[in-house]
Length: 518
Image (tube, rainbow, N blue to C red):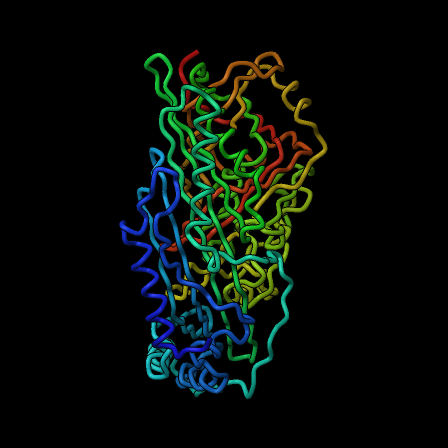
């Protein structure tokens, strides 16, 4: 079926209203959706031809918009087109309590002059709207007019998230059994479970990037997120905990074992805290458990390696390129190529291919995370880290999947080396001063280490320190790297992007633990 742009948007808008309507989400006693809400769908076309086929965005129109954006000069212009469909449903007390769907469409126009950016966007893919945005972005420049490319060359990409069944083709009545099953599993794991809250989110997104160099690159990005929290009660004491999984993929990636793990992990985390206590306070050796402890690496260290902070002299790493900043067994990577992980991208939002970037190699700082502007400043190639939340934002250097590589030690060996310390296992939130790297993180779950053995569970404490200082105090690195597949979203300059993070088990010789007096 073919339809013009107005018909297409009218059809998808009807889907938004339908899914948001509570009457369409009423459930019968058997636990099935009584009526199937309409989910807006993205038509399955090759990404490079999608915007022309569906919205009439021809190469000639893109060339005209670029020429208009460069009419006052400028070194570079890019157009970033986006069409996305998102849907979510939530369950609480065994019943659906919320549902929504949205369709987003627009284009952002960026003009770069030196290290300055002119940016404008429009939600209408009509010629006059795009030309108006181009003129607004062009205001950054004042010089001889630039020219549009004579033609575009479509770029070929590797695909790090092959998908057979896209979410836009999956109806609501196929989503609901996921939450029903998760709800039943969780209640069945422990009689102390009193409340279960679960939610499911999915997204399909088409993007197209055309620039003044003649590059044309497109991608279709899938995403889903399944979240669970549960409340347990035992003799008047209430404990709550959570788990989540989020990946770039379709139905095929939401495997049974992932759903089962989600329920087991959330219940185990909550149940363990019934017997947990606060750790001792003070400067202690800290073992960072593999997986979600990567939040510390991301926040306290990774942001300091984003090139815009270094170009502006804000980061503590600004003058440390090719200098040792950690032990020789420490290597840190930011990687867009991990199959199906949340932070993976085939192409960044400037058109640079997804790639694997080594930031720290055997303890030595080797690279920053670059977008086009910072790469030009440092006279190095872009690293594929120019990312944006949507067409409403200009791209800036952002992380993808950031992790520490495996080291030479085993987890048991690391724990045996600690006389008295703590293991930090589940992190929830924290605060970081990116310039200096000072941080505070809240730890929901962990364990005491006493005489080289993992002993009592501990809960609800803070660790306080400085990222570069902690990196220099990493004395042992395990061989059990785990990239966490939870719902991590990184916020910077008012925009959020999905990311991944990971860590092998690591020993930091000393971090301030905010517990109780011994």
